[in-house]
Image (tube, rainbow, N blue to C red):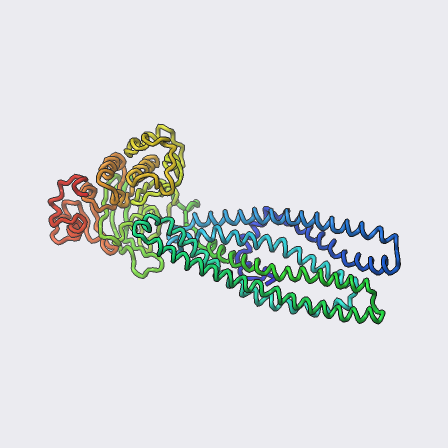
Length: 602
């Protein structure tokens, strides 16, 4: 579709697109002016050619013989120079505009709520930021460069044709509408094929991201060949999609060649007849045919540019779909309240929560109280809703029903950044950036910290020992996801990071469940220091951790089924807590395990 501004996708992204174009409007205006001059100069070529034949050769005009070659030189020099400036200005505008689009898309992604990342894989989202923006970049460059140039050139050549001989021009114009039919029909097929192809490229990206992330698992179970076969299938599907686009793209060329040849053939027949019978000069016919050929070239270019336009509109549709997704509600306006230090309690009041797309609620009418400075353990079988419950406190997810109160105020109405500043989280899977230990420790801090602060934090977290043994100490780069460190070392860095944040509330989501006994013992010692004077919520399976809690809540299928201290719950014959400890510790009499050390309970 040549007139892409009527396209629904363009209408969808018109607002942000105009905002992206605005900083580069002068470059674009300059490029348009250069394209207009270049097209105007080109339209003078067939007129000069007519005069060369009719006035120089036929009438032996020697004076004009000296003027016309210089005129050709000037025309083509101006055309070349303006063409360079046009390409320079428009290409620069396109490159930096798409850089802004890519940045806006990235900004939108990181500001979306956590729940939005579950429905689409990492590779698919990466494809939107990388591949789709590159395709859009090519399309924008083609639209604001080739489309403008070809349009201006076509208009210029049409004016030249009318000036040379308006009667023959009318026959040419009868053919032009037939060029729009294949452009429109094939353009629709190109859009659909391009959209499917980009989705298949997303599958390739997704599989690559999954494979590289799980490479240890793949090698440990010997599934390299399975993954190679899967990648081959995704890659082949992508190639098939690309081939279909190439097929449609190249269908336009022979159709346009045939229609163009028909129009020029009619002009040759009528013009030749007129020359033979003396109604038209030879120079006029040659000039007319030259202008007709030069008109056909930009029209063919407009048809060929449809492939780039359709590719870019398909990419824009995928980008617009992401940009239309709702952002996380941060409540940073004046109507929200700023979370201050916890002084009383965090209270759940009949809280229920369900993940989008799932019929069963993950949490059902949960009510509990976590006193300031207290230590609460959340236990239960896998899938019971433990992690979901603690993820509601920093509002990674919002309750479907009920409310969570921080010192009596509903956290849904709080400034989320101030809420999260009060909470420190350590999970089983520690996230470390491919940066130095120092940079990972201060990551996300809103305050300046000194070298002494960092050393104190690593000492409290029992991380100073292994850091001092590293050749570069705090400047050691830990690798992607901390691959150069052991599990225990990564956990200790996570704890040190929490110490530097100095939160009121500490959430430990099975932070020691995957560690060996020695690492767990070291981290338990660190935790005792870190948990002091902080409200602590622990998800754990180890008795050594659970028994220290002031209160234990047992979750099963999204409901709190038992609450009390360890000793109180152990007195309940046939209770869920005793059953849970039976299964997790693998002993018939959990009461006999009360005296175990961390090493014994591993």
